[in-house]
Amino acid sequence: MTPIDKLKMEPFGVNFDLETGEMLNPKNHLVRRASDMKGHYKSEASLNELIQNQNNPLHYEVFEVPVPEKSGQLMYCISKLQPGLVGDECFMTKGHYHTVPETAEIYLCLRGEGFMMMKTSDGECRLEKMTRGRMVYVPPFWAHRSINTGSEALISFCVYPGNAGHNYGDIEKEGFPERVFLRNGKVVIEKR
Ligand code: F6R
Ligand code: ZN
Image 1 (tube, rainbow, N blue to C red):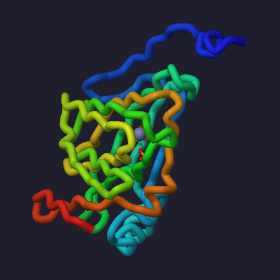
Image 2: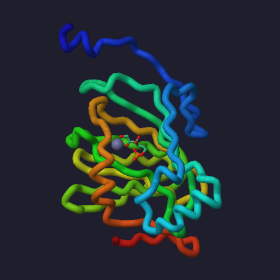
Image 3: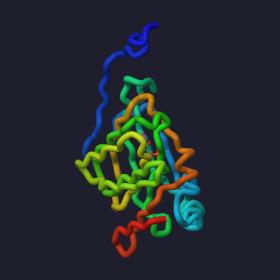
Image 4: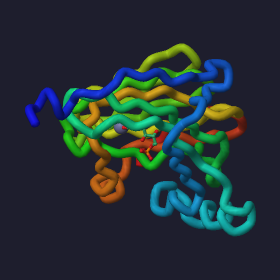
């Protein structure tokens, strides 16, 4: 098989409801609950409280109709992050570098309000506002996590190279340099 044959496939289409931000008929559905988020929030006690007393609530979901994980392909998905607080820290995704670090990603926000937090391995940190109709470009080498500061789900359409992969381990070790809280209805950003 030549390299071209390996990438050959039939064109296809996928339907979205742009009002709700839903991908209709996804093939894969990844679910993360509060218990999947151990070690990511400032207050582990508040996270445990949520797991035990609030029935381990849904945190975020990823919906996709996957394509082969190969250079030349474009992977895409819907990421849906629930609103909520762990103590006073806003719900967020785990965050990751791409396994192939020189791969970028585009997030188009369809609903909700929040931030994309991005960091380099040198500790540089940036926050980009996410709101309906805003695209955030995550350049190569930047780890990224979404943070929901609003009262409804934060929903984005993401596109990234098929061979990018996800490296969660380095972020679990390093963490992100900043945290986002909601205090008295105000967004507060703090350095760790
Ligand atoms: C893919 C990507 C998103 C996230 C999703 C869940 O490269 O960045 O689709 O995978 O928002 O977040 P994580 O992967 O951090 O659990
Ligand atoms: Zn990514």
